[in-house]
Amino acid sequence: MTRIYQPPGGEFDYGQVIKDSASLVWRNRFLWFFGLFAGTTSAFGGWSCDYNSYVTAAGDDEASSADEVAGAIVAWLQDHLALVITIAVSLIVLGVILWLWSVFCHGAAIATVRDISLGRPAGFRSALSHGRRNFRLLLPYMLLAAAIPLLAALALAALGALAFLLLSTGHDATELAGALLIGFAALAALAATVSTLGFLAALGLWPVLAVGAFLLFSLGSRAVVLDGLRPLAALRNATSLLLDNLSRSLMLFAISVGISIGATIVAAFAGLLTAIPAVLAWSHVYTSGWSAGGVVIASLLTLPPLVTGLLFTAALNTYFAAYWTEARMLFSGEKKQVRRKAP
Image (tube, rainbow, N blue to C red):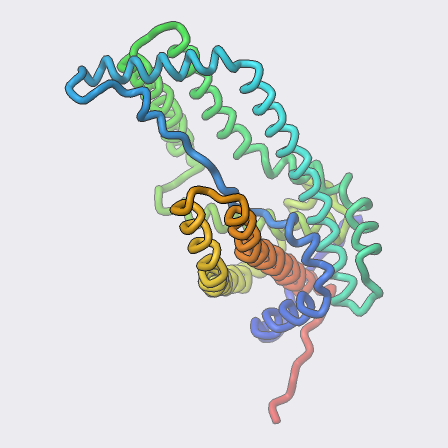
């Protein structure tokens, strides 16, 4: 049976939410393990290749150079097709496994935060139990929430497949560019059609829609974990709570953005300081001929900035897991704020 929620009465103490979340996260640092993987957003480093070696000498025709580059890329892909497929499949499998693990950790973090906030016993083993119990409930919701960006990714993948097909069949760069432009124009036309149908009133609504989607996702995932609701029921519950607490939700979101910016600046400064020895060490290794001892020392000095980044990610993800769980419990009336009298 779905409960009917009422917004909390009286003034809302935003400072208490901030302090309670910070205190909870610091005193229960075992949650950082789950927070490291439970974040809804993450950044992954990438690598790039320089194909300038395929370009002919200066003075050659630009179109000919572009065709040679395209031909070299296609030839390399065809010669190493098995390797490319193996790497692609491995990355997909790894990505799916990490995503499933993030769903597990998301449920574990939210449920454990509630236990701690309500004074119930909580620990690493109980968090694992929460993760197992909530996984089957949270997975359909996460799949529903991921449907739209997944469709966008599939559209981009289709354009990439089209580009590879044109390259492999011998079309020149001009035809390839034209085909890609047609594909992007089709996507733009689709977006314009959606806009005219009333789903997007104006371009200025994009930030509002993004914030609204984030708040609905955050409140909905907590409705699944804390109340055991199914995906659509959780979204309805989240919509009701959001409308009843719209001004509070927007203020909490604005505060969270400020906290994120401040924490990121601090983490970037700490990462820069810890990275200076590694940069100096690798510079020395490069100029001294890549000695084995220098490589080992430089590699060891690379660990501190990496550890700093992981700790920052884990702590911040855990903090916001607690932050929005505390907010949702206050919105639903499951928890009451303690009114502190002025001295």
